[in-house]
Image (cartoon, rainbow, N blue to C red):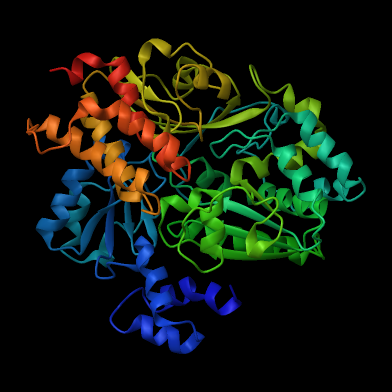
Length: 529
């Protein structure tokens, strides 16, 4: 994959996406075959349907807050609108994407005021001037690893300390800290760093996974906008440790403002010559949930369709452009500067049941949806207390976004950590907690999550491509009482889920059935009606 091919998605964005003749024009500019240009462009949502300038989030939190009514009002007003997957603004629903700007809390009245002109739709965007709620207020900033409420620090103090340490000493501190990946898998961070350092190839890369697209999750958005200094310095420390000169920041295409903040942060550090031997490269995704999977992200960075790779080899061995690559989530890398400054033991002791503090997102039926940095292992009741309390009687919750399925409210006193959630048959994942009260129908809630996975499956492997469609159609048939012999049936759920779990290439297919299987387990009466 050469540089011209890698530039194809960005050139398509400049040209406005796949308008008539665009693929041919980009092919002529780059020398990349037109079929390849069209294949890449048609894979990404933001490069297709170019006549749709407004997109309404149809994630679970937004639909519970009236997204369907907002979309209908737009269609009635003649706005060029359509539904879309989660916009990482679940704390201020319903969210709308106007071109590349995320608009929070759009109402039917806002649509009426636009008078059919999509450019006039609610000028307020999610920016540093109107960020969502962050808490709790803390008296001692040293009790938090990221400290979302702190002021940006451009001194490079943590990097300066790391530069005086040997790489193996830095990795030892990361190992002592017990830092786990905060993007979903909870994988040991130090293991990744060690794996890259053990490779003979000397050309290595660091990649930031900022493709936050999990329904219910919006913590990375807040970290990028509030503490860009922690993210950049963490990336620099990682690059120094593994011997990389180039760092790539992959941010989802809907993160226009976070990307601007990060670019400004890079420029701020460069003006102080803090990281003279490290080059930072910004890259915007173009709308594909699957690119949150690290190998799919690498494919997209290389200018290809964002489809997961078969593993092994793993990115630590064969990553970006075939070189050893260290990939980390935004929250994970933002913890690194504090670990270096205060030590691994300090970070480990911040947690209650597992190491570190954790940035939890919470949305749905709570008084103050937002992000809350708390000790890893707090309970749902404690998290909701910080968020102002429940709205109505709690019925169920997703502890880690759509991927984690649903748990009944009786587990609200259990620690929200990786091991406990796994033991309950769920996932902490990215800690995108969504609370549902007793007014919500579980079949309807499951249907929203299944639709998401069906829409976002990349289609590469049959178990995921067919399985996500089968489960969604089977549930819709049950909801609409259409279970004839020639329709998908829910009695095959267990078999389909097993095939998806065993045969899918990546995590999307392996967990896509969990919203349905978990709801059937804990709320069987709602599926037997």
